[in-house]
Amino acid sequence: MSPKSFQELPLFLLESFGKSGYMESFPQVFGNNASGKHFHIRKDGQLAAFCASIPFHWSVNGTRICGQCIGSVCSSEKYRGQGSAREVMTLAELDARKNGADFTFLFSDLDSFYRKLGYHPYGEEIFVALGVSPAINDAAQKNLQTLLKIQSSEASKLRYGYTKPGETLSESNLIALWNLIQRTSHHSENTLSFLDFSILVQIPEVEIHTLWRNETPVAVFFVGKGADFQSVAHSSAAENLHLLARLFSCYFSKFPGRSLLLMLPPKSEKLAKEFYTASSPAYYAKVLDTSAQNYDFIVSLITSGALYPRTFQSI
Image 1: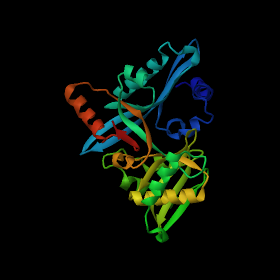
Image 2: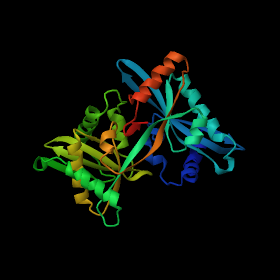
Image 3: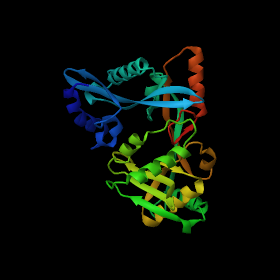
């Protein structure tokens, strides 16, 4: 991306998404040491469309799988309806093919648009509303009561930790939390490097809520992510559900007037049945190698959940 276009990008993204500080919310895409790539279309000397991509890698039973996550897809209001977003998506997909990606994927609720580009919905987000305030609806209060009933009984052995937005975690605590996330994630799921994780926890407006047994973290979730995930508890990890429930008990004791949307972790279909939930298709993928053998192999991995980012359920 040319220096001129990059200088125009903050205002372009603000006008497209209506969120200030958008670039700061995605340091892995726009930061100084970002691994993301930027693609744009110019028309009449102006930015007309933009998107970015980030490489992801998985190891599934010894087979290396490469994917490109495409995001921040937007177009200028002046050029909407003229195929600009489609053009810039094509640039990102061509780059993915050139760099050996097996498939591209993205997160969106624009079902019709992405289906026309060859994407298929393979996963959905499941949200659980939680709250205790009288202003919160009955479902959110009942959900919280259900969650608290299954919390760990070893409360005296556990310590709650809260890291405010902008507050720095020690390197030893960062390593401990990263190790917790790695050891409790799906066996074939893409894993962050420690460097990637340390960058992500510095995103503005991120709260980190943790539960510790002695000096070892046993549960964690994050609230907020810059311009994204306001009042959403995301990226949760725990040794078991009872410890995660205990962490939420601590959270609502500290913030009794708050409400949250909890993004359920993967493989939570049975757990979801215990709550009043909301869900929507959100994870779309497109296999780039359409030869029969490779296509069927990648689709089988996607549909089995082996290549899901954290929080997505199969549909």
